[in-house]
Amino acid sequence: MRNQSIRTAVTLAAATSLLALTACTTDPSVTEDPGGSAAASPEATEQEWFDQALYDEQFEQRTAEFEGDPEQPYLQYIAGEMKDTSDLAVEGEQKVCFANASISNPWRQTGWITMNQQLKVLQDSGVISEMETRDAKDNDNTQIADIDYFINEGNCDAFIISPNSTAALTPAVERACDTGKPVVVFDRGVETDCATTFIHPIGGFAWGIDTATFLSERLQEGDKVVALRILPGVDVLEHRWAAAEKIFTENGIEATDYFTGADPTEIKKIISDELATGDVQGVWMDAGDGAVAAIEAFEDAGKDLPVMTGEDEMSFLRKWQETGIDALAPVYSNFQWRTPLLALEKIFKGEEVPAEWVLPQEPIPADELDQWLELNEGMPDGHYAKFGGEDLPGYPEVWQERQMP
Image (cartoon, rainbow, N blue to C red; front, side, top):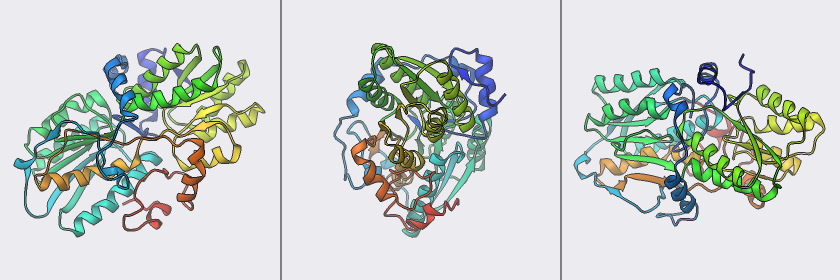
């Protein structure tokens, strides 16, 4: 059953079954977005995800000016409402409690390594005493219990939360806010603005706009695109597809979408089945996991390679260079894993932070491919090119060896 392809038109029950089956195997890159992962609620799968105002906002943010040093993109932000944290200022080392959705895919693993190297810097400087982390392993109920454990334990000076899914985690995040301690939400969003700051790259709509525009400019009306999606119910992923679907429809491109669980075998099967019924001119992905498998399916079938969007994962970048396909690598900035800890450093000092901390999110185009491959030479396939940790202790060995804390 795990290899059964599922289109978005399937029943809610079928989509929920897929979530249960993929809960321990994958988790997208990105949220607001992401990213994303596992057990989205039934209500989330029924939600209407297209938001014209948010689409328009992120369309404009793609070309916005960012405050801060471009050499430190993890500290940059788009000017907007700032949060006064003077009442949260404290002295001495503080204990941070981190409720993490998972480290179940390469994007999250890369970020987790980076986050822990940043933690070492802040421990050495006397900002943070320790970071107690609980990993929900892609399960909403587990993460809710993790947050409640931290609250009931009463030993947390601040909370960091990377939500597993959007709607289900909202009440637990609100309970953390009710403690009066700083709460930093990052990666994926929730349906409350109670957090001290919400940190994320521009968002899923920006990803969808960049990628679908790229494909649409290279394809003809009536061409076929296979859209490979990880799973439903996570805001950043749903926003990616909502934007892409809008643009494909406007350009007369036939796009058929499937949930894959980022399973390479499933991806190959989907592509092979589509190629058996006719030509496929394009491949769109809401996360880069399995991008190489998609290309290999065309190679195995002896078909012309498609125009394609993947992600800045090294396996895709290397396959892109090897094959010379016409491609784009969208980015859901992995360096965001540093930002929550750096935000807490500011909050503990009582400094202002953005209420919504929007980080840069710039795709890798063809003319930058060789540059990013050279910068990440020696990194494993599961590494992400724009991870932004080159100045941290342990670079590059810690990332090369994938030393999970």
